[in-house]
Image (cartoon, rainbow, N blue to C red; front, side, top):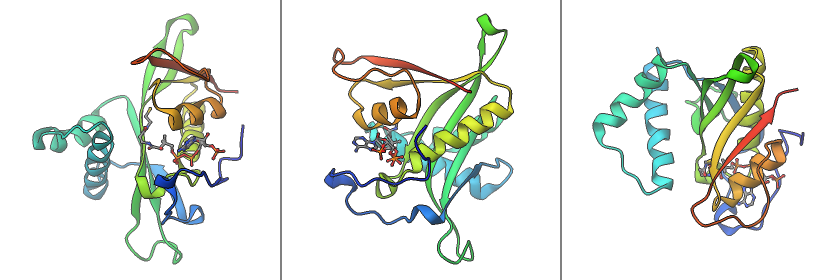
Length: 187
Ligand SMILES: CC(C)(COP(=O)(O)OP(=O)(O)OC[C@H]1O[C@@H](n2cnc3c(N)ncnc32)[C@H](O)[C@@H]1OP(=O)(O)O)[C@@H](O)C(=O)NCCC(=O)NCCS
């Protein structure tokens, strides 16, 4: 598996202005008893919806964090704690929402990654890869056999991330509108 802390510069102009130093990024589980985390998850879920040009109604924005807190789910947050180690309020830069699902053939559980979102100005700094790595650690700790996810065929950055992380996501062209299913065994 590639070094999860590595940050490679891509030539993509949309990611050319990076404002977040990977060294000051911390990843932890969201605490749904903490109103600040509830507000952070609310904002990041809408940020992720923005990628698909979807505006969530206020009622859904209000409900999503409490809903996730009640499910067999965990949410990882990546925050930039800054050079002073967190004296200032950390800035949330990424979110990963995962849920426990069944594997009948293994009489066990696996972890399905439902959403992964890195805010635009923090992309291309290895944060997405680190989120997957931390998710895999949580999944192993829960005794899960593998990670699963779905990704649209036209999402080249995500497909590349997942494939190079270890998911069996194919390279190359797929039919328009295809949604690809990927599985990554946990060693
Ligand atoms: C997809 C996404 C999560 C990647 O997160 P990220 O932090 O920018 O990715 P990383 O910096 O960790 O990059 C890891 C790998 O992803 C791939 N990748 C990331 N951005 C890429 C881009 N613009 N073009 C091609 N490959 C890219 C590369 O394989 C990269 O590995 P490398 O740096 O060794 O070449 C992020 O772009 C994102 O949140 N996009 C919008 C929401 C989304 O599409 N989520 C996924 C839904 S399934």
